[in-house]
Amino acid sequence: MKWKGNTLFFARPIRSLLALFGDKVVPMEINGIKADKFIFGHPFLSGKRIEISTADWDIYKQLLKQEHVVADMAERRETLRTKITQLMSPYGTTIDDEALLDEVTNLVEYPNAIECGFDEEFLDIPAHVIETAMKEHQRYFPIKKRNGKLLNKFIAVLNRNESNADTAVRGNERVLKARLSDARFFWKEDRKVPLEKRVEGLKNLAFLEKLGNYRDRTDRIAKLSSFLSHRLINLNMLSPEDVTLVERAAFLCKADLLTQMVGEFPSLQGIMGREYAEWDGEEPSVALAIAEHYMPRFSADAIPASKIGAVVGLADKLDTICSCFALNLIPTGSQDPYSLRRHAYGIIRIIGEHGFTVELEELLCKSLSLLPLFSEKEISGEHTIMREKSVSAIKEFFRDRLYQINIERGHRYDLVNAVLNADAGFDDIGDYFQRLKAISRVSKEDWWPDLITVVERTFNIGKKANSRGSVDERLFTEAEERTLWDIYKGNEAAIRKQVDEKRYEEASRAYYAAFAKPVHTFFDKVFVNVEEENVRNNRLSLIKKINELYSEKIADLSQMNMSGDKPAGG
Image (cartoon, rainbow, N blue to C red):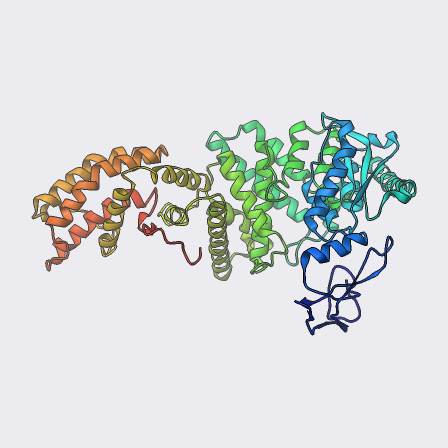
């Protein structure tokens, strides 16, 4: 809100400013308003000007409370919680929206609540619509039965006492009735046009500059969904019959953007798509996927439960991320206007929790190739370079997301980095999570420090090898290097089999058991950097092969910090 000039932005008009240090006024001014010792009571229940003689929080709260202002936010919140709970308790329900409680706590000075109602006839509107009208437009608390079914009652928060409660009840009921009347009209009118017939109209809804409209975007989502479906079919993670359902859901997933209901309540996109799809007689799994493909809508939200919804959701989010990166609309600092971090978080969770085995780079390349900027007919040397740069930038973006997500989940930063820096990387996100969980468990074993030492020592020496050259047994001159080579040959196949079967804990234990002692014996007895180049390179190749047997597919334990120090940054 602008107030008295163009320089100040604040949630409410500032009419006075209290700034004390001890008993002295702090000489400051905001937009022409100078600080002093005075504050004001509730504008309707008091209006009295109060002098604050000293910077004492308890005195400040007490004087304001006498004038019907509860300054302590925690006290306001708990007062509201108590009043709302009392009103809900006869119906066997409680507050289920803490975010809304926090919001209304910041909208009042003298917290109070009243019960209101609306005509039962409005309950024929989908419950999501009624709740959205209540919460987003009016900040009301819906009242439900124990089974979660919506009642024709709600609670409104007041900023005054009950002296004029009847008028407040009638006023709030009148406002909601108008909202619900509009919603009922939209619900009735929208159903006259099937979602299928709305799809072509998406041509008139712009997406991003140079990337066409929402009809073009729908085609991209459908093609990417089909591509992803066939990849999952090949891995027995999706049935061939599901492809038709995935393609249908992708085709219809954005059609509800043209409905009057979503125009009035944008947060219902997808949810109304499901309602209208069910009305149109679409397959239940298609209708569900239309709603699910937006999930997770926020950090604590669930992911799509159905695989059809998960596939369409992945395609939708990948298209958004690739589109924005192609146009260099990349998040910086706290700025993320297109919610790309949330989309990446959703992709990571969907792949991880559904256990999909997909290659991130392959999906990014496919998604980018569908954009007008990188379509096959326009591919040139320059376009290829641009696409490769986009893929690299997006993968780095996902790398950062994976790091942050796993730190927030309580994983040690060095374990996260060790798995990220393995040659296997994180292209297979599901596999990345499996390796991280396995290594986290292994890190609690008694032999963990010895495993780190083996991998770290072989890394530090092996990195000097110029190439991945083969080991020539004829160049062995010491018994220890021949012994180490025999141990490698004797264990390599078994360890690789365990890795291929994703039995990473077993592979870690087998690697430790095979190499912990002989590697140390080798380093104690054999000088690697001898003058003879061919012997030196042969020994380096041997050490490198031993290191890569673990670091390639599991984790690069040279990243581990055994000192216990925390990193300066990710």
